[in-house]
Length: 552
Image 1 (cartoon, rainbow, N blue to C red):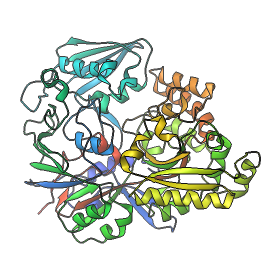
Image 2 (cartoon, rainbow, N blue to C red):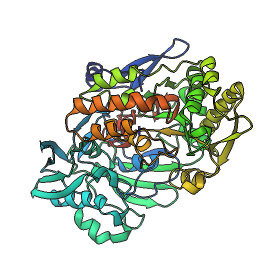
Image 3 (cartoon, one colour):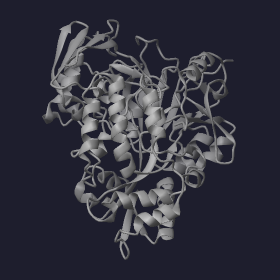
Image 4 (cartoon, helix red, strand yellow):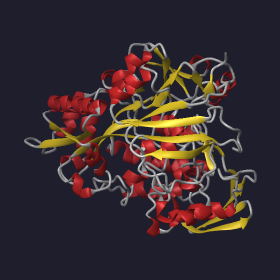
């Protein structure tokens, strides 16, 4: 759940990009920002490549990792889930390529008072089968998250909701026990996805499975889920926002980094997101395509997995953070495709928001990520850690995470801290995030966090609040927690931003995640194609809507 520039992309710059996007050609026509790397060389960032011009019969797109666990919106959570769903199933609001918030299936949403939010729906949307989308479909889709028996992983987005009612054929009224600033933002991601009500009822327990499928409104409709290999889609010719130029889109799920890279260079695959860092040079020099870097909500870090001992001590974590050379980390681990960050809530996440100036000021007030070994040693002076070994978990086969852990291990040696790298099978590593017993022998976890929702509260509250999903160290700061609740409990954007920044000034110095660096989005796309979203908005926005052939 999380972001890109040290780095703020201004609204004016993005507007200029959108004008350029009408031109033909590759990413050079759509520059949105230029960042100097550690050697002083410019790195160009793009939110998208220019819209496609000609129709394309078939595109094979690579997705790094296993196939989705489900296509049921109440269960999707992995990178693969989001990249798959974003072209098929739409949310009430849409995130643009600059991570801004705008209309989607709902034309607008309005707080009529602090406890009432009214959604005005589009009246020209149909599902793939031609049936119109109405308020009944929206109510049924949202209420599935509310019922605990359904097991929605997004139930917290609805914790303040009292009722969801159809107040017209194309109007839905949501009432709240407490004002909730995050609710509209969450409606632009998975919690706001609309599935046909009748299809939900008819599918029963098979919804979202290879056999049950799904019925949505997006620009691509599901044709086949070939278990263990691909998912096939075709253009929705009746799509309310214009039919896609690419008529067939097939997603290939590839676990092995070298296999994906070779398939891209060999033109078996036309494009892919999250391309391996280790293959960046190979892909950048490929004659058949282009490696495009984009702004992202992603940040890499290591987080504590225990609630006692040095790893649970903010001073110990601050010492490690002070000893990390983020610039060097970005060069050696991220291949230069990243930037130093002050905290895990990074600028691309909030730079398009109404209260961006407030968030920017608060971010800049946090300590700069400058290596300071003397400071690190001072912090460790009063902590009993000698003779202990601290385990760092990484997924086996993930070269980037392993190298990240190796950097932390080497940093520990300079401080007299003994780190041991624990490489785990992918499924076992994934279990760490939801099973406390799986974390029993683990002190730290290397991970990349990202946000799929505009706004800033979704991710931090999982670390700061007592019941937070990622508060594995039992972190408690009652003032910071209360400020987070106050930030969420208002419908005024400026007030919410001020409350969040006040909270961040407290928890941000306790290093709930030890930041290693922000990551740019990495997309490889064939020279024959253009029109793909290359920022991390591709998690929740139909990234292939404008995908097509280049100008002849």
